[in-house]
Length: 381
Image (cartoon, rainbow, N blue to C red; front, side, top):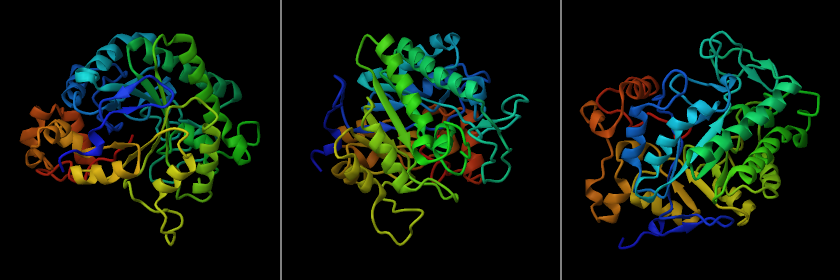
């Protein structure tokens, strides 16, 4: 194809921020930070290697407070002392005109007392994640909920001071924001739980706190994104109808984009396997242009990206941009045959993949040595 639509610039509806193209690198776990969440030189190298081609680059998730930590090697934005390192990271990601977004979160019950150095994980309620090995969390108190909301606002302030072009609130992948929205993990009977509207209160409070931080701190256009997982398999769990109701409330906020976290752009409903509707299309039609949506999942080739770009606003490419940092540049140079779709251990140094990241890849891919990243990493975290 002589000109792909995904190579065209994109301007956000409510911000004077233009992306040079519609390709996004989504947040992915790299485990490259120091133990305390400080940015490392390996991390800066990894991100800089992948900047310059894509329009938008979103970091792996950063915790907003110590109890929000979900895994080792995770970024932190929990204190002002992290700003200098985050500033270096933002600058690296903005190489060549790429826009840089910091994803922020609290892991909630998707953590452990080992990771939290003896502290019990927290959540909306004392309900363990229905997965092997996860501990029963304790329910956050009302004061702790208010403090966590404040921590999200402070994280936004730090992202602005560090030079990022935006933040993404991680309301997906079963982490704390989603835990408050889910009827499985939120069994509260106070103002922070109960019916669907009450379960929305915590996510919306965080959005509004982020809006306030942007209004008070940003002296330039600054993006506010929100990431969702459309459904949960748990019973009771989030349904697509629940997600559409949440989207209706988000339409009344100042978010600039919605990021839909799925392993396949063209996935149908997990909860209704006989329903042939494409979930992303249902969401797109319900959003009805209120804000752009980012789709992600199993996009590898230019043909894959073009198919998605024909249907949706922005297209995220996860695994493939780990394997091929110069994917966009090779498309622009009409050198698609040079795009790398597999890597081997001898490629790791060239690609900026440090041993900690490689070990993580191996652990979740079943130890597929020689062909890492062919099936390994989820386009999320």
